[in-house]
Image (cartoon, one colour):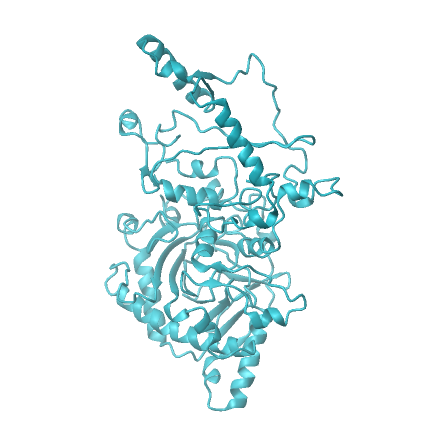
Length: 561
């Protein structure tokens, strides 16, 4: 993994490499023009704790309006010393100035790793990378004595811990004000979501100078998970927020906090992004504050009752599951929150939809090939014969026959990655009965099936529709070995098409290693060449693959070295 810092410091770098080109057809004139007349709200924190009740009430009203209209505001007079804010940013700079070897010690593989150093946002799923290095440290408040943090540069860990404690105090005061602005008890959010034992995430970002800033992006438009994010930076601009259809450049007051409301407050979680420049290195530090990982976050009953429709806009979901889903995907606007919102509406199975008496055309949500953009479909023919493997010959007493069949099996894996198996010993009766069992399940009432509607990709039983409705822009008409061989044997890309006459039922039995097993190329197969893939826990691969759009082999491709 090459860091953006190392790339930006390359003496011969004059243009943005293709892998970092987000806007290939953009010129500098296409960049959004700043909106100087738009003033981000400023909240004086000292007035939220004023002894004057009228002053407190006025500031609470201003805070509620800032949350509702902007979802972003500056906080002044917050009580965190300027010295501490300056020292923690210097600590971040010192970390990014360490050698690549020292930083790579903290290269994590899972989104919930305690310490994770990396580049871009989620390089395992992105088609284009972002011009950013980061350090993320998860700090669960129920184990404050188990504070794990990089010990270099010297003193960085101690400064970071003090900074986290001070920002937690600021967050508590702001959340009390927000609770009151919603006409709830002052401690409602803090107590209900167990913020005292919640999760803080220390996120340091480095955006080095970029030779063509109009082509690259530090971070794409996105919203933050959690409740409140407190951001400070080294005086170099680059943050833009979306407000009423415009991108607004944010120029913070010195020694202030930029605060944005997160998805789990949704009082509104604002879309924002980070742009880069040609001359200066920007460093920002975001402290994300969320509830306890196992807390189920759902709308406040009082606010649901007062809503016109008297219905909840969002389903309850464990904070941990939301973080894993959001961090495992492409960072794209508020897609996870929006899909979580729409997914809360009664899930209509494809079976129910297909059996609707008035269904004559496909709903827009299920159109996946709007422009008939298809590869040529070749009919099964003698020239295109999917390999057939006779299983009985693999266990034949004739060594020559076994050897011949093994060679055929290897060729099928290498050329096709797909083959038919005959004479396998599983009775036709059993195969027929299991298909009928599946049909029987899908014929159950929606109420009976929805009992098994899972929320997490590793739930033992999960009934649903499409592939992953939480992240898909279009749904699929469906109710629902390669790394080891170092690329020699292929995992074939396949798909399922539908017809307008008959119901197709299929049963896929996926067989994998133990969840904790690290899968990497067999050592014997890399003696004569470099490994093609990095090693990865099977559980982690499953979580990333199942949490994303089902898109060709993007996850596999990202593991290539």
